[in-house]
Each structure stands twice: as structure tokens, then as C-alpha cells.
Image 1 (tube, rainbow, N blue to C red):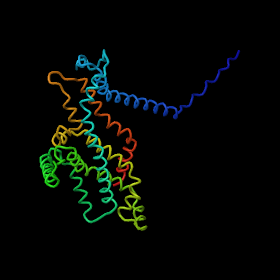
Image 2 (cartoon, rainbow, N blue to C red; image 1 turned 90 degrees about the vertical axis):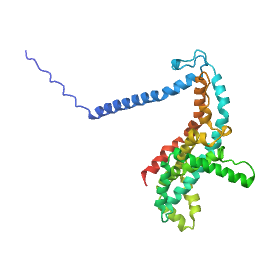
Image 3 (cartoon, rainbow, N blue to C red; image 1 turned 45 degrees about the vertical axis):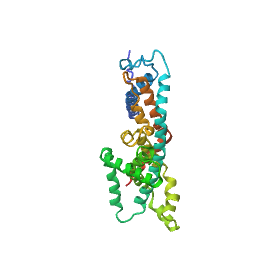
Image 4 (cartoon, rainbow, N blue to C red; image 1 turned 60 degrees about the vertical axis):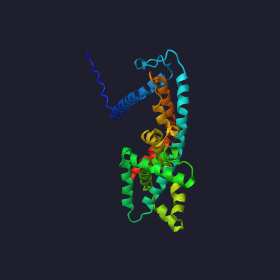
Length: 305
């Protein structure tokens, strides 16, 4: 009897495409796991803030920071709002007009320095940039002296007390002047990306400097304005040093009021946590509203110039 050998099946050809897909899937999984881990690490302080803000004073203790409240209460939020509300309003009066004024001035400076060249433009731009590296502490004394002098001049001219030193207008002026260099840099780098042909075409049509700015440059400046407004609003809202030196108790912004929420004998941790969350809400709202333009404006300014 003859036994017929069955031929072995041919070896399966290895699928390079499938192997590449598996590697890509593993890489995506690792990236996702790392992102989730970083997100959890980032949100740990927020968790502590949130759960502590709903604890009564008897439970708000550093040794029980991770534990959920046994008794949930909104009393710390009510107390924090009562103490912080005047400072929040002062910060709104400071940050909203300050961010808008800084954005407008920075836009005009950036437009002139990028599209209307004149002798010494590069030197002037370099001097602008020097202003970014001057620390707050280095200008504090002369800044106070300047605002005091402005108060005296205002009082001598109008007969009413000055509104610069010890009040919101003086703090706003300091932040606007101090923010001009970074605002100019952002707008100048953004406007470099606008084709020069558009500016030349506007000139040929008879448009002057301001008409070209209003009709050609300003309509495409949304991302840059978003970057500057977020930057300046956050900087003004979170400022503490200028606020302490340049304002009085009636004009203290949020950061100073937040610093003053402390007990004489015991530390009201729940009130402090609630106040910290309240103080951070406006900046989060601004970023949520303008955040989608933020990276677009930064990257547009980084591609050229």
C-alpha cells in the first residue's frame, strides 16, 4: 500500500502593513496613557482645592486634605465671595481695559515696525525688546515716585485728589506701559506674515497708513489680538507686586484680597481654597473663549520674521 504524503501548506507571508499598524496602535496607547497620567498629576491640586472648599472649618485640615468632606457645606464659598468680591471688581476694572488698550497699542506698534519701515526702525524695535527684560523690582521706586508726582500735578490742575498713585488708573498705566514690549513683539512677528503685496496694493489705491491698517491689516489680526489679550489679561489679573505697591485698600485687586484671607489664630483653609477657585475663574473663561486662537496666533508669528 502506497502512502501519499500530504504537501505542507505554504508559509504565510508576513504582513508588513499589519505589523506597522500594531506598532502604531501600541505607540498611540502609550501616548494616551502618558497623557492621562500627566492629566491626573495636573488635576491633583485642583481636586484638593475643590474638596477642601466644601469642608467646614472643623474638617479643613492639611492631614485630611485628600479625604472627601463628611459634611458638605457651601459656607466657605459664601464667606470667600463676601471677602473677595470688591477685589474681583477692582481686577475687572484693571484687566479688561488694560488688556484692550495694550492690544491696540501693540497692534499699531507692530504694524508700523513691520510694514512701514523708516530709518532706525530696527534700533527702535531692539529698544522695545529691552523693556521685556527689566524686572518689576528694578522700576518699583521710580514708578512710585512718578505716580506720586502725577497725583500732585493732577491735584494742582483740577483741585481734586490724584487718581494715579493708590488707585486703579495708576496700576493700569503701569501694566500697559510694561506690557507694550511683549505686545509689540507679538504683533510685529504676526504682521510679518502678511504679504507685502497687500500693503503695496493698498498704497497704489491711495490708502494711507491708517486706512491700510484699518482696511487690510486689522481684519486679519484676530489671532494676534487673542494672544495679546489672553497674555495681558492673565498678567494683570495675577499681578501681586505692582498691586501691593501702587494701590490702597480701596483699590486692592483680587490677588491682594486673596492674600489677606487668613485667620489670626487658625487658618481658614476651606475659605482660602474657595477664594482661590473664585479668583481663577475669570482667566479660565477668557482662555476658553479665546483659546482656539491662541496657538494659531503664536505659530503664525513663529513661522516668519
